[in-house]
Length: 250
Length: 222
Image (cartoon, rainbow over all chains, first blue to last red; front, side, top):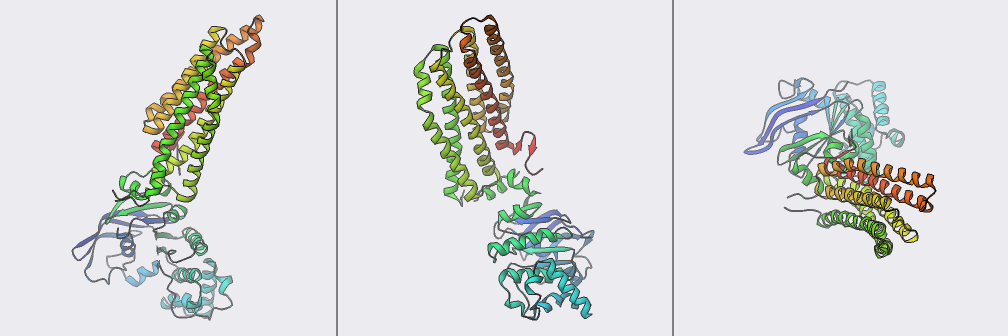
């Protein structure tokens, strides 16, 4: 069963710059939560807090809580275990320069799965899950870099899912893809959300309306408004959200 | 404020104005039918008939604008509410105007001015219909929900007036007195006005949706 995630009174600083300001937000299991807002508003920064991807940035300081279930991931938490439980897919597809098979089994091997039969099962199950199996089953030994953009992104999602995470973070996962590949990845996100917590950062507001159940709007490091997606897009409560959605933004 | 979609926002602003223009034209046409019935003013009826094609063109233009905005611009938030509500409201207003047009034609074909007590009731229905449309369109522009809700109250008056006309026409038919021969036309016109009230209520529903996001008590997404 997927764990929900939440942040409580989260503040993030890059040196003196206060990049995230007192964010409190719940992201439920079994649904897609979308983060929207203009560039630099902090949505990707928040996403990266959820599996501590900001840890290695010099001068980055986080205050407040990031909860996976009831556990604060910033307190005595093995970061490798965290990243198994909270997987991430990035803006540009980034398959490893390995075979398709090895891309999928990279994580499971790292976490102790070495049986060939077990790895074969993981590869078939995961690639089937992302709708890629029929396209690549006869060329699993080909390089992951040989795939098209859409296929490569689905391979990256498969790689993230292969270690059986509970949460999947997606940082603008379709911004480099054509409409057909975008549609496939969106459909996949909704499917994955049935038994995961999916959190997506997107600049595409139509995408947020299509796939998310809940949507959060950020501006200048603040969480302006979070609401069920239809409510946020039809009757936003805050004028800043209204202005952003309607293009009257200054 | 910096706007990022200035051409789109101009179209949205114009749409708001167009709904108001259509509403005013409909009110004017209803009032002209009252003049035609109550005062035998054939010129007023002719004005409604003459303006019918121009009204249709305006309606189609605004409908096209709504379609274009929905298909090409994907409006959101208050803009989405404006475009969807306008698209539906102008359909209701067009239906009302169609009935005003039919009423105007009938008033030129037969004498709806007698008996006077029935004509007075029809004029009262026309006045009430015009008032309801005016309030519905006003609330559409202003977002004042209380004005829209008042239209629902006015519809009770409309139903009562229709009943009075119907009762009087039945009495005329029973008595076999003239002008019983125009009873079908009188009832048709009364029904038109009664239905204009229903459509005005529908415009009010869309005014409330535009202002609140709630349509007949249901909120989008629930």
